Length: 150
Image: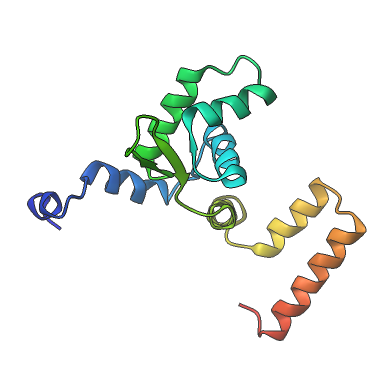
């Protein structure tokens, strides 16, 4: 699409190219993930809301730091911003499970050469699963096998 066509449709090429690039790289940073967790748990929130929650678990977190991160996240397409009111309200653009799937897929490709088995083996070797988690994994594998695999 030519620049002029994008402008007519109201598309920002910087945001589009950044978001397309972000899909190839591990997306949100650790700080951005902390903010996303707040948004996933609490729903649409103002910067003040997010700052209040983060500052209880991380004292010393600055309001302007949270504001800047959320502005960057908006530019990156990680959150949407409702500017109707004086206090802008931010929402996660993707559900938590979608973000997890995207990040695991990237890790799978970059670190494990696309091998899900190697990823699972390393995950289980790194952190021991409790019996309930192992049962859930077995059930998932059984269901996956019944559906015919990939």
